[in-house]
Picture 1 (cartoon, rainbow, N blue to C red):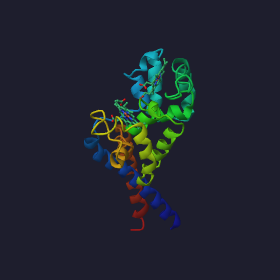
Picture 2 (tube, helix red, strand yellow):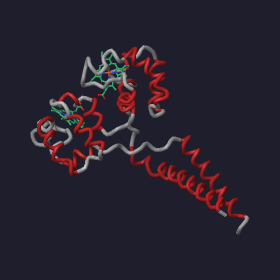
Picture 3 (cartoon, protein in one colour):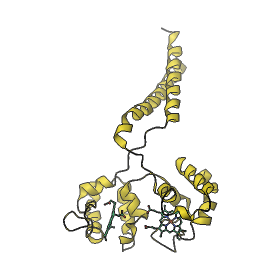
Length: 224
Ligand code: HEC
Ligand code: HEC
């Protein structure tokens, strides 16, 4: 009896996981528009950094790594490419405001899809506006904690000092995000929704769901 119960729980959770993927596939496509790409993918695929790559093969290898979710065990393949073509500038010293690409953890961060706010602020065109050491880290910690309203007063004073001169709807640069209010700032720091599952993942989920249902049927048939 114990074994049968255990098997049932396992099969039910497999079926539930597969069903969740399928529901997400049905719910997301219409609402999410074009799939957002990571900073690194955009920079090397049509962006300003592409010209530094030595060959199309390098680009393919990098894009594959990004697509796979920047796994650490494939860093060996990627590191020599970055070393050869990118680390000249991206060494964390020559240009302190651009992302060091000689460290796995940082290269992996810019390989993942993040909020526009995180991208611009941590290693993007807005990084240079921080002046005191620690300001950027304070803002990044707040974003990573989910941009809680309780932390806003501290962030607000940094925004007021460094960012709001351009980022306000009255006297700022037209069309930019308002960084003088909690709501709009927090909204821009929300991570984008996960992309809809690929066809392969959907096919696999359907398979898992069918096998799990068949398993449940066989497990309970004898008793019934
Ligand atoms: C000659 C120096 C130089 C080289 C070589 C270089 N970069 Fe850059 N990279 C920069 C500078 C400067 C910026 C900041 C641009 C800005 O703030 O607009 C930058 C920005 C970036 C960004 C952030 C883009 C963003 O969204 O703001 C990424 C990612 C990047 N580079 C990747 C690479 C990769 C990958 C390579 C190698 C194929 C590379 N870079 C080679 C100078 C360089
Ligand atoms: C001198 C004016 C200026 C200052 C100061 C400034 N920004 Fe920006 N910001 C811009 C411009 C122009 C853009 C659009 C171009 C771009 O994305 O690089 C922008 C874009 C952004 C974006 C993307 C959303 C949008 O509004 O387009 C974010 C997020 C952002 N800035 C955050 C900040 C933060 C945080 C600071 C303070 C550390 C800051 N900015 C300081 C001018 C400024």
